[in-house]
Length: 460
Image 1 (spheres, helix red, strand yellow):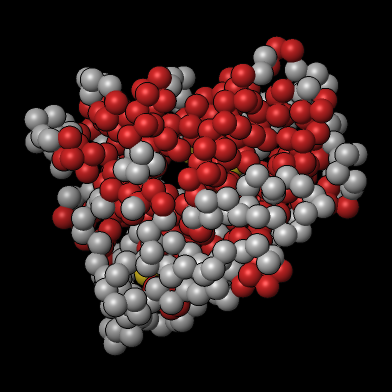
Image 2: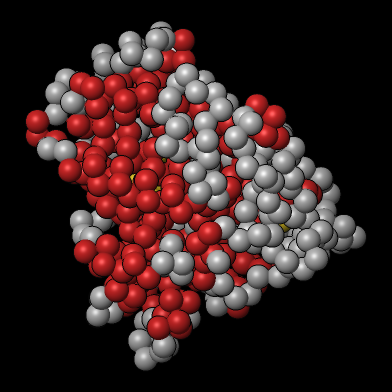
């Protein structure tokens, strides 16, 4: 798979408009760590995280969440569809995410020294966000020692340690008085909220809630923390304003469509396609072109590719870090598990409607009494959680399949996943990624390789 590469120069030109804060003539990787301006380094960090999650992680997550499957007329993603990913297959997403986090951590380090609490909060949120994705894929990652620029062989923290460190770091950043922040203020260099710090606080709180809920199976101690949180995202936290130009489009589109020079490689997985079709879900035609779906992993099928549905992708789709609907689904589950549950239905309904709206559709009939997605108010806790996670699965299409993959490993929902026709793991679904070979070779502190079928800590 080709590496998704964004030109910093083109991105800064695209997003900065006429803002004098952005110096588009300086690559932050070529500047001294202490001398780089926040407004130069932040765009590179945000774009790097978006590229890492939105290309290769999106492909793997989308296949393992059974949004799409490898075309039977191509072979680009056969190893993913067959669960044959090993340590030598995907060095790119690990390297790309840690490269982006290097920019973010340098901002955090300098912002702390300068008492620039605005940039300190932004950097802390982004560091925790990127680290959460890595920890959920690989379980153990460098975190505590990852800030040391002179340490090329950082030790790995366990997944449980990473989770505790992320919460502690977010709490520290949220404790700072933003009204006393020193120095420059974020503006157009903030590709997510344009410098609106109220929304960054909401992003931090919502990310904390996600981190706490992700470990709900492994730790009962998270209950009080999750129950006490408030002030969550009411809109998307995303990198947006992509355009249909090379290196400036949505990274999933850029990686799969433009760089591979094909529009038919990803085909509709029968798992999601059939689910939506059976429910009469109007999102079906937005997700997939006309045609029949392909059984998950059936790239050896002799059916004519002409009649198999192609996945619809757009070059201008935002990369969602946490969408409005994900925020609402998280709140709904937390309300169920740790509060009275009185608000769970309203939060669930709002989340479902938000995702339909994203596709220009009205989902009212689906959540109404007797509708396909009516909230099971009279059901058990597990039935309600199943409804929430199943709808979160659908709303993660197409680029956030890694999140629904993690949620499936945590909860077992949705229940209709089918083992890949060409699966190579003995009917056991994958649970993680192996440490990349590049890290194994260069870092003597890399733990022993663990099979992809072994659950990460919070799924045990």
